[in-house]
Length: 391
Image (cartoon, rainbow, N blue to C red; front, top):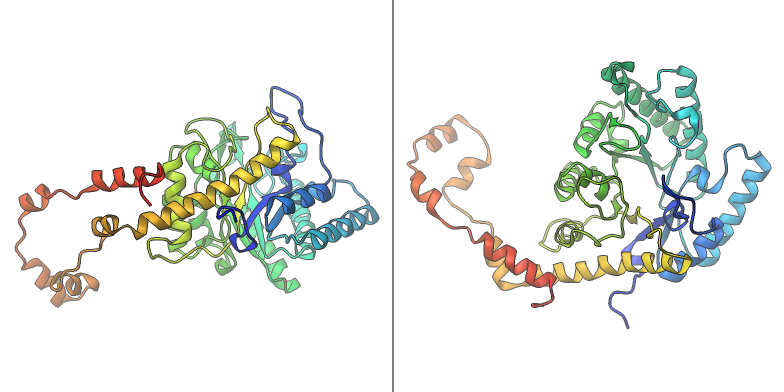
């Protein structure tokens, strides 16, 4: 039995827009035919995925009649049941249509904002009908090129207003649904209003129902601006706000590439899997592992499914490597937390007595600065585990 074959317990998912990507880009037409959603469900099941996610218009084209919509949904539900897949997450396309060229929730035209909220309510209904428990918001057009078009504070207020409205809608409908906000620094707009996961975490703290809203960090989006994705995810986990995650790969400083997970920075991918799986003894992320990426434009349909299988296989290999690394005696010794019977109680909580005692201690800065920490050895050992020398 292949130890790296995916199982439902791994909670791997793909979007219809990922495996269904026809390879079109700004410089060239599609290289693969558009596949029916039901076909994509069948193929994902054959690859071993447990879930499939979707934008509203990935399944139901804009302008479809009520009867057309219901037929498409029924066919999709039958395919899900026949192939044993679930829909963990759904989202709304608020970026493709020309109506959203100035944004959706933050647009200057109130008619556009109203249309965006209405479209989101309809899409939330669709997601819940398909069984989704998580709803992602990526503000693909919530930004500017001509920055004088609005005060950025107005955009923040409009985003808050829309999210509060939709939270109340979910509460009113008694849906079991949470929201996850996805950040990105740029593209397709020149500058986005909420460029990082940290920006989103602060916005959430200002909402009427912050308990309903978390984040959906994406590898490529943090890496585009040269930031550490691992740090962003850790901050979200520490705040108990990691509701969903998008896995892919990205070269720093490039356009949004959505490459196969682990295909670029293996070191960061390793550290990310180690964090998500809690192999060092920390709490494990319990949500779906969603691959928001697509096959190279060089590929035919067979290459798409090689991409899907490779994404899951790389994750599981990195998980095995992380487990071996954190079980290693030398590694445990290098990263073991140092305990100090005197200092730990003094630093645990402020009190006037603790502060006086702390200030009364004598320190030797020269000795503190001269001690080696062994991080070169630790990093080299990690590289050797990644290369298969150990474990």
